Structure formats: structure tokens, C-alpha cells
Length: 392
Image (tube, rainbow, N blue to C red):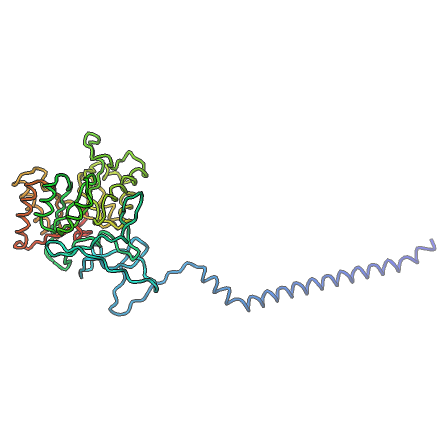
């Protein structure tokens, strides 16, 4: 009983100390919070401009060049807007498709390309000689490629043609060339150089035969065998592209055909009434041709062919057949087909005919070609028709 009053002052003292410690802790926390907030605000004020700059750099940006007065804009391409450089053709009517190549933007330390040697043909026309920079060696085959300076085989090896010529144009492609020494020689020497020759990939000595044709002034192509509707009863050969094959197998066959000889502008479909109607099989082949800088000629063995439309959709230089000239190999039939081509050219400005290396065809074509000047019609190589014909 006597000890109780003595303990009360000690308990009161402990309470005061506790409240004091709590007050100190609260004060320290408030100072920390205020100090931290102040530091954060200060950091933001000091670094705000740098932070904003970094954020701007991270944002996707589109730079649009402003052209000076009279400056011509760079043509678009499907290679991501690469600039367009002129090939062997030149023109002023605003169409870039048949006269241009998709080339990478030049860098400041890129050396100018070396001059390409020329082949002077018997008719005086100069064609570019085979250029090693437009070739790659793969499994001993020489495959066409787009050059490091952006030049493409289809325009580099094209027969020169004045694209300012406003006359209606007719192009003739003779397919299946190379079989039979005598008939190949006649096609090479008797036909005007402006008629393009497409060689079968199965021909022996195809490289020498194509070089001989170029020396005579002809633009050259290679037949690309494709599956017909009645395959295998009608068989274009062991390297035919088939809808039943895998993508890899078809691309391997494509490379075999393309590697047969250098110096050609592109390929012509051979048969293909089935293959050219199946987009899944056809599109990778067209993309492969485009990636190698080649031109594509659709013989349109089937009216259902979608090849030309697909080629246009990926900016693959293309042309398509309007008339098979010698399905019936007689002088009268050939002459009527040629007259039909003339009418198409007058109506649509451009026309393409497909022919075969037959004696009667060569004779009628040679005779017909001599009449065109007086009719106001230009006989053009197939490259001068690239991307000109209106789609159906």
C-alpha cells in the first residue's frame, strides 16, 4: 500500500517519452517525404527536356521530303520505296515500269559501276554483254541476280528501243527455239532483231545458241515449263513446275531453268494451262523471278490464267500474249493472226504475239515485218511492252 504512490510518477514519465519519440519519428518521416518529393520535382524540372527528347526519338517517324520547284519525285517500288534508275530504254511519257530498275540508295563512298561491255549485233544495235556482277554461281549454275548497283537483268539485256516512239507497238516472241540446227539458224538470222527469241531449257549448247541470237540482235528469254491441264498426257518435260509438288521442289526446278544460260531478259510460260490458274503454286515462282530482276511473259495457254494479274500485284515486269500466231501452221492463218495483232495494237497501243520456230512462220514473219513501217506500226522487243498492256 505504501509503494503505490511512488510508482505513478515513473509511469507518467514513460508516457511522455513515448509521445516524444512518436513525434520525432513523425517529423522525420514528414521531412523525408517532403524532401523526396522536392527532389523528384527538381529532377523532373532539370531533366524534362532530355526525357521528352528521348521519348520523341523512340516514336515511329515518317520523313517526307519537300521537292524543289521543277524537281521530279522518286518513283515508288515494292522494295520499300527505293529510287528508280534508268535502264537501257528511255522515255518521257511518265511510265517507269519498262525503263527502270529498282536500285538501292547510293552511299557517299560507293564507286560508280564499271561500264558494261556491249555486243554489236549484225543490224548495228548494241546489246549489253553478259555482266558477271549480274550473276551468282550456285551448284555450278550461273543464276541471274540484281546487281550491287541496282541494275536488273531484264532491263540490262534488253534490246534498245526508242520509248518516245508514239506509234502502236507489236512484239513477237518465238518460243521453243533451239531444237534443230537449221531451223534455229533461220530463226536467228532471217527474223528481224526486234523479234524476241525464247529458248527451251532442254536444248543442248543453249548458252552458245543464246549468245549467237544476241549477236544477231535478238533479245532472248527462256521457256519456263508449267503444268498443263492434261498433264501427264501432255508433258512439258522433267523440270516442269507442278501444282502437286512442294514449294521447295518447284523453286529448285525454277532455279535449274534459270541457270541454263546467262544474258536473257526473262521467261515465257510454256504450256501452264493448269499451273497459271493456281495462286498458291504460282505466286512464289513469280516472287522468285522478281527477286532476280527478270521479266515475265504469260503466254496465256488458258484464258483463266491469273499470272499477269499476280505479276502486276508484286511489280514484276510483265507482258502477256494476245494471239497465238501459228496454231494452224499455214500462210493464210498466220497472215490473219498478224493482221489481228495489228488491229489490237491500233486499238490498245500494244500487242504481243507468240510464234513457233516453223519454216512457214519464219517466212511469213519476215515478209510481214517489212510492211510495218508503211503501216505506221513499230516492231518492238518484248521488253518495250513491259507493263504496258491493260489488264483484263
